[in-house]
Image 1 (cartoon, helix red, strand yellow):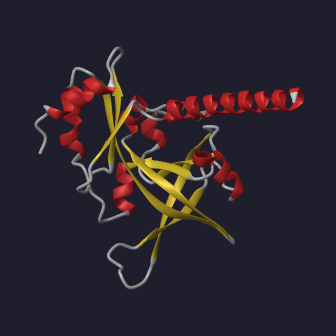
Image 2 (image 1 turned 60 degrees about the vertical axis):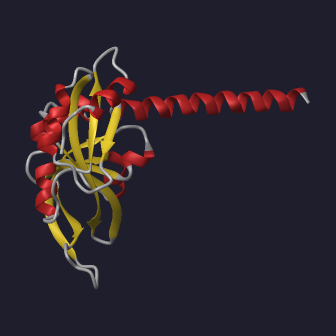
Image 3 (image 1 turned 135 degrees about the vertical axis):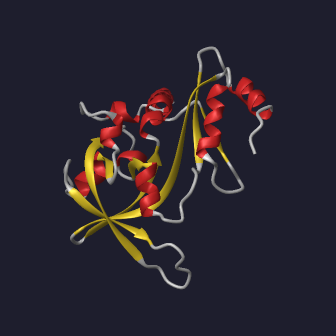
Length: 212
């Protein structure tokens, strides 16, 4: 019984430690709060007024879509997240996971992406390599057709979470709009709070904000 109890305690301690590590990594790349609409895209320019709230430190808009990466006979379906290069660094630490001296705007300039290091390794992609993304053609209802879009890998990120390192890529909102022609606005807003502010204060301020 003693051996069994000890083994159980060790398992619980290990699992608890693992959960804390994962939680810490998730918190490091996600903002304090995320806002989204149930009625379609958000007007990003209008929503930027949220940063004027007393509890808000920064606001960043983003949209996420599925794409296909292809290299000869290897293919991988991943999520491509279009972000505001300057604002994203104020609401998440994604750029801190990249070993580079380039600015955020350089990393995500037109037709450039940053890619998870694991998916890059599995498809044998390298930094500065030009690759082709396969994107579903808009307004095709009867059958699926894919458009090819050439982009350059400007950097690789290493977050330490399989979900991101093997399944995510980032580009600018501008590049996202070019690939998805029917795209407009953003799917969600990442909100970073000022020190000593909390979600309850933010919710109260948002309720009184006059946004159409």
